Image: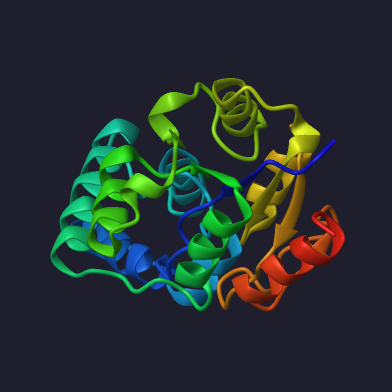
Length: 221
């Protein structure tokens, strides 16, 4: 079938936000005398939904006995505030890719493990909010990435078959989610996910410009 849509992850794919997420986590965890260094963050939290991260943190830091939902609440509230007050820059090639999608008639959806408030703060600052016809966030699914539900929901809402879309992801969790939904995926690693397993991706790109070039050469030619 003809490619009709690109499904975009947000954190680490559209914006370089992982370092900001780690900083917010450390603000939340400071009162509990827990600190997440860069190596721990890369190994256990990069690309994971907040609920999964909390589970991982408690396994690694048993002294952290605060209820899960309280940690999730603090993290998501602080993140939305941080991103609204301190705008993040779009990653290389993102804005040009959006323009090229318009030229090619490719539909766009946002498929993210982050919450709607956090994503809204990011996209509003970049004036990207209206460019995605569908948003699938953490609140829209029962099981977030690496479960396929986020991608299957986006496809259902858009009325697309899996082979009519391609996903762009920066982590192994995201790649796994797309692959399990039957969607081809291009991986775009960053400093926080460079060591992840991207064997399920059809292509590993250095940036979004390279990813779009591959799509045009191999799926639109």
